Length: 232
Ligand code: DC
Image 1 (cartoon, rainbow, N blue to C red):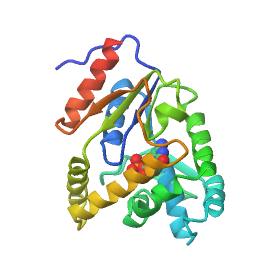
Image 2 (cartoon, rainbow, N blue to C red):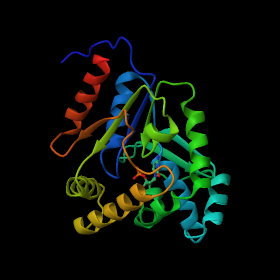
Image 3 (cartoon, protein in one colour):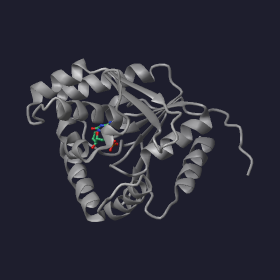
């Protein structure tokens, strides 16, 4: 199939949705097609969670976690590595691309993400990165809070079972020993905190296009979004 030239692509695209809904994979593919940069903002919250675990900071101590978030240095670059990562994530000068995906970080990242000072620090960095446009930004609150004026907003949803299955296959492919039920439980735990928090909860923006991907392949979702872009 030949690629069509897109006349007037949206300058900023927000892609939100729950854990393991395929946001990052789909957002990166769309960014590639448009020649845009992409930013998976979950990486930033994961970096703060990693730092808290590494420094043995109690994640229930909001002030201590917020201090970390305001001091941390996070550098995210497109990766040349062939080990399944999409980005190299350098935290305070050290490559932590896989450490931020550990079960220990999964366990606490949603707790860390509820604190207003943590969110302010990350939102500020995200808006700085987005200010030149031509960006696909991926997260939980991009369409609602970080970039409320984004020209296109997509919200991806899928059932916990489907998301757990996808994550399970990904982890097996990376040679990890994983349990499907534990993955599903961890996703439920994060969904609950991400949707229930007072500041910037996970929810679709009023003007977002909501796509349920339960019965769609990655290719189909990308085609659907590209059609939306073409039809603007
Ligand atoms: O997309 P992810 O699973 O890598 O995100 C990890 C956590 O980061 C998620 O459970 C909640 C938080 N997060 C957030 O609060 N706001 C965002 N824009 C992105 C992620």
